[in-house]
Amino acid sequence: MSVELEQALLTTLRTISGLTSFVADRIYPDHRPQTSYNQAAVEYSIDDLTTPSDLAGADGSGEAEVSLTFVALDLLDCESMATAVRNAINGTFGTWGDLQVDSVICAGDSDSIEYAEAGASLETYQITSTYSILYQLGDSNG
Image 1: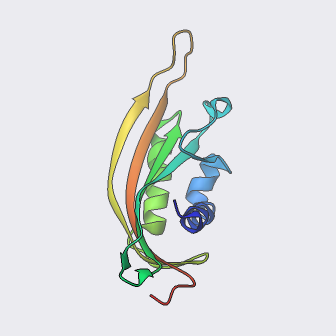
Image 2: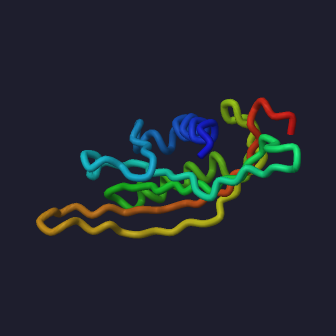
């Protein structure tokens, strides 16, 4: 996984006030810690990361499929978080930290409910948004 892409993604997500007003700094790789199960949060994963190259080697460009799972006790909060991120990054391009982002496309959303374990009364709503991100590392001659 590209450390540069992960850092750029986190920095960008933390600037979206419509997201951070719900989650503050609760943005986690893969799974949120059990201690935050009753709070709104975002889980992210960077999948299918490809680094195109030619005979001369890597050219500094890449494509990643990024999954963002918005989790909250209220479905409307989940929808608000997913919408805030989509409005902020979908269809955009430009500089994210040391990355030159060429394209961000939302490939789709899915929703689910995580039911509480026996004896617990909380269930959480989840919306997973998948984005395709094309980028160039900042120091590439691309």
